[in-house]
Image (cartoon, rainbow over all chains, first blue to last red; front, side):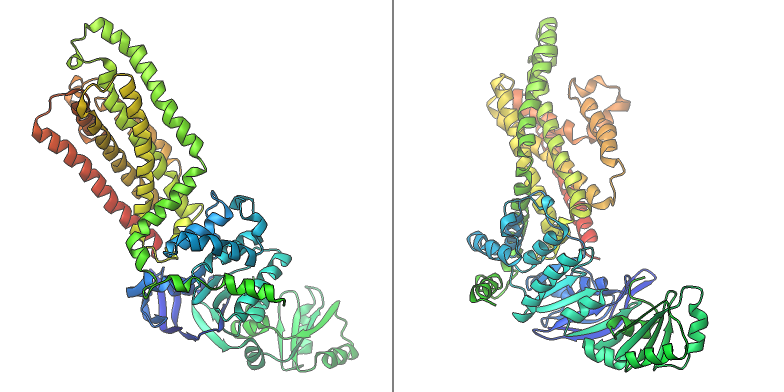
Length: 304
Length: 288
């Protein structure tokens, strides 16, 4: 559905996207994971045919966005990072006018809006003005709007940023349903849990480049151990403790507030450490996550 | 998962496909500008009462102040021979008509255009569909034009009822006024699309450009009353050109045919330039 080769975007001297390659196939849920400024949104905008590439090849649904922008956009559903609903009109009218932009007939859109509002769990808000909706509701409305043309690809740029945990879970549930229905999703996020939940396959981006590619499980397997021991000795003592722990597990990361020890068996490792007389203030054993993959690849945390 | 939930999902995610032809974007390519205009008109409905009341109150205010107030005073003391031998209200009527067109076009193009890019960001939402930037621009202008036509038609009817439009050709004062309004509207849209923040620009333009234009374009007295050094304001101002045409239409102000053509051409030129600038700015703003 999407093929990118050497795809680049420069703004003056700044290279926002630096010669990246990726493919997205039908029915797949593809993620772009990376910190703010990694080039994810710029990549999304190029796929959405609203930003021209500076170099490289990009093909969406077999067409070139430079030539067939409007035709490609007719097959996409776009959920931008910042909501851009019309706040002066009713919730249902937002879906109606948007559907008109795809040339869909008004009579069809009246019924379609009802179905989409029900899917987005917004039926009782149909006649409310957008202004009165909560952040999570606005987000769901934006997603419903993006579905009005029955898109071949649904693009979601940071779909849950700024939402509270409950709203995030409702949204994830809706997106998961879409995935089950076979909608092709392209998602950017800087939340590793979101990427793990929603993406079949993802690329990790940093400074406009792709650092790694694979399914969440593959990435964790390739770039991290199975488990992680997190130890906190207090900010003044971490450095000293890290030096003395050197050589334990597969690998050690020292962060400003804690020490991470990567190992296949966290409980056993922790037990051994305590047994040796280390006295961490808090300790925790957990499964490796994409956060650890990112740390390994870039030496930095996803959320700074 | 119950079957009704699955049915709902199926319905929510299907049905659109069969309404598309081979080329999904075909209808939008043809009628996109009109779709945008329909959307903008729907938005206008949320402040329809403001539009309605100002469209009615504004002309009434001028008609009473200038017709009954200043007008009757001038008409009584001039013996009816100054100002081409027509009543003062007849004289200022066409100018007020154009001024109303310009003001309502200004209202529909400044903050609404800036807001579409900056506050609601709805132009970006539109551009995620098959719409192209120039179609979004045209849609904004069509909706503004509909509002302007409504406003000046109400104004024209009131002038007519007050007896300020004595000639049969007076209907032609309408297109002249609308043209001047849309010219200003297009230029203001281009500017609003270019500015990334308001910073008081529109208030400044209202006071430093529109207000002088209103006062120095031969609105209340013939432009020839002004010293040559100030007449250029009128010559540049779409308001003066529309007013001259309106006076020709409204009460038969004598204009040589080439003047008629020249005034019309100037108004068309401003509108054309404004539109080209607007298309450019919309494109620059929407395509990164």
